[in-house]
Each structure stands twice: as C-alpha cells, then as structure tokens.
Image (tube, rainbow over the protein chains, first blue to last red):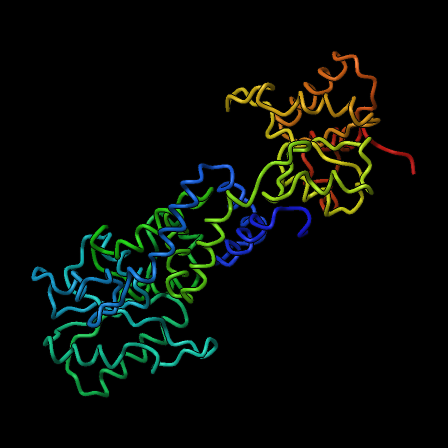
Length: 204
Length: 204
C-alpha cells in the first residue's frame, strides 16, 4: 500500500498502531484525524510525548510516578498521610483509582506488577524488599493488599501474606473486599463474585 | 488530580485524549504504555506526528493524499490507469479500501466529505467543480459514485447525479451495488439492506 498513501501518513499510522489495542483501522482513523485537524494538535501531542520520559520518575519510597524534579511522592511526604497504613497496589495508576474514592488517608506502595509465571514475572521483580523495609522503618500497623482481582493479583496477594508472616513481622494484613459491584444485577454477577459476596456478607 | 500524577504524564494523557473516540481511561492506558515502553517508541511517534502535516498534501487533480514532493497522485499519472473512468469517493482513505479489492483500474476523485446540513457541509465545500472539469478534459465515459451508504452519502450521490445531468454532460453514471455483505446471515441484514438486495437481484 506504500503507493496509495503518502509515506508521512503511513509512518504516522504505523507509529500510532503501536499503542495498545490499536489496530490498523483505528490507527488510520487517528492519523487521518490529526492530518485534518490543526497542525498544532499534532505538535502538542508530539511535544508531550517527547517530554514524557524525562518528566517522570519513580518515587524511591513508594514507587509511585512523580515529577522528575520531586524527591519523593507527595502522597508519602504529606504529613497528613498516615505512614503506618500502606495500600499495596500493582501499578502506579491504581493509586489514582484509590485516591478518587477520597476515603484513604494512608500511603501507597507500588509493586510494579503482579506475579505471573506466564509473563516471566516472579516475586524478585516486584518491589517487595522495599515494602518490608518500610514496615519496620515506618512502624507500619496495617497493610491493605489492593492487588487486582485477577489470578495474578490473587497469587501476588497470597505470596505477600506468606512472605510477611515468614519474615516474622507482626502486622495487620487486610485485603479489599470482593463482592457485587454497585449497579450490577445479581443475575449478571459471576459465580466467583457471588461466592465472595456470600462469604463476605455483613450484618445490617 | 494534578497532585496524583506527574505533570508530564498528565500532559501526555490530555493530548492523547484529543484523538477521536479516546476517553480518559484509554488515554491513560496509552500514556502509561508509552511511559513503560522504550523511550524510542514515544520519540518515533512524536517524530512521525511532527512530519505528518509537512509530508502530506492533496493531489491537485484527484484530491487524494500524496507525498508533499509529488506533483500528482500516481493513481492518476500512472498510464495504466483508465482516466475515462472515475470513482468518486468522500474521503482519501476510501481510495485505500477500493484499491485493496484490486478490481478497479480507473482513477479517483475525492469530494472531501459529504453533504451534511447538520454539520454545515454544503455542496460548495466539496470538490465538485473540479470533477466536472475532469469529465470534459479527460473525456470521461463513466463515473462510479462510491459515496458511503449513509444518509449523507446518499444525498451526495443524488446531488451529484442531478448536478451532472443539469450540466448537460452525457456520461454513464453508476453507483456501488447495495446488498447483503459477504458473511452476513439474512436474519441479521437490516430491512433497507434487504430491500436493496431484492431490488438489485441478478440472474445466475
């Protein structure tokens, strides 16, 4: 098709097609949109992409994503945050989801993934030693394991639980409740979700 | 959320969110993917975007998209293409779809849209005068009106038909067949599609 479309457009389509879940048709749509739109939109997107890596780093304590010129995540350095309570999440964006609830005032620890033998991710690739250090250094009282409700997330949660117990650290370990999400009818909730909802039932 | 994510990441999310059909979650996914991927991928995408507008122009004859350093579309200049047969399409990417069939050896004419009063697009914004010029200049024998099977595409097709007749140009005017797409069961074909399929039925 190299003859059919200008090479600059083909290049843009190819590059946009590297984004996750973007097939050839979607990439064509994006590129054609940008071509028809004001040149400024392409330029501003390009500019943001060029500054992305240099503008972002990992917090050395929590492994949250922070501005390259920050020392440590404000979600850790903020004195209003309870450092004795840690929510352990898989990925940095999980923090955004939890913060949106406005209900959590502890600190975070990003594992950097979940244990997944199929993807070649073992516990040694996760930020687990740094978590254990924090437990003693910050005199942590409770760790909420907030990994995803996937097979990998569950395995990671169980591994962490065993690992912390084995380390002889006496601490409250909790997990996010599993149950029926708000707005979902019982008949559409999966069998495992319903089992969790039954097991975790609460008195009024 | 400005405190939660590094500003360089927020910028990338915002800019990616301008792409058509990309909501906040998808933009986050794209940006986070780029951040985790090799820096080179962001740089190559940025580079392609910066070269997009300057590398592409419209063919002055067919209004297909061509390389900025080309004079005219190869789909027109190629002597193997039949200049007396024109397929009229709405958008440049429609050419790619028709070329993929490998069955068309005429030339193209891109209207640059379809008549849509709701979007403020009237016939005067389409490349219709240039089409009429080509009809006489290239001694065109047949025009295949290959606009989309939408209300706008249909209106545009009817407008073009009347317009060419009114101009007193004696030419064969055809349209793409409407009917049941390959692989679609009768029960799922819409009523209007079935009506077209009945009207357009052919002998074995």
